[in-house]
Image 1 (cartoon, rainbow, N blue to C red):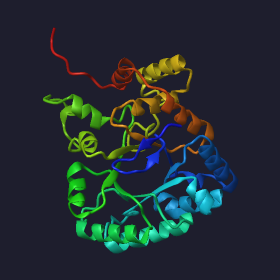
Image 2: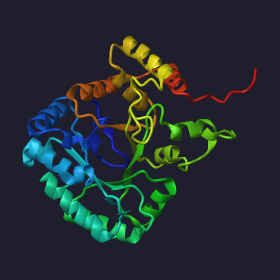
Image 3: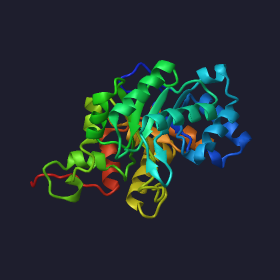
Image 4: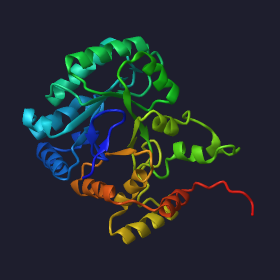
Length: 310
């Protein structure tokens, strides 16, 4: 599989990341088989978080791969911290450092390739984040850093104090959940799509060479459901199925290809634990939708194109 550069770093990664949020749904043998098939397909970038399964997903992953030095060199590991489930967000120095130690212990590795701060902390003190990042980098425990679900001004506030470049921003994006794209199309309009809810985060990340990682690429809301095959999106599914037939792939492949077609070089984070669907996602890297096809899916999802009168 072809590679892409992650943000302003020297790290070459696959155009898709394998999200491990549902790893705790697999037993040891199934997890081992799934990870092995990912590696065989060239999908060696695995995305974790300390809250996934309350840490169990990272433990299951490490046991499944039989983590050792050789295995570790064959993969890229990313994890996230900062959410204390049901209680608060915590970007304090001590919490970040303790969280990383926990992540490394569960993954049975000495370092993370990438660490993301998981959602914004309203009480963030950027100086503490900077101190934590310096400690982690100097110790070799984390090589690169980024954020998740943050607006441009939040990233700029952190970057004012953090010495390391923030190279990733993980954001929700799918064909029917594409407000960050629609907002840029509805400039100078008075409709709902023109409301800037995210500070033009798509354009900001492109300007700053920050890779957007698209999570939930098959969801139509905040974990409300999958749009593929859903009766709520008949026009979209018809358009997707037509393209799937044309390219001789599945609807899953087309849904991912739509994200990959955007020139921002967005990296989808797949969440499936099914090897077949994973391979369907990987196939999307070899498909480049035409401009007309991309817009056809955008319109089929219910978006409109503001146009002048004839």
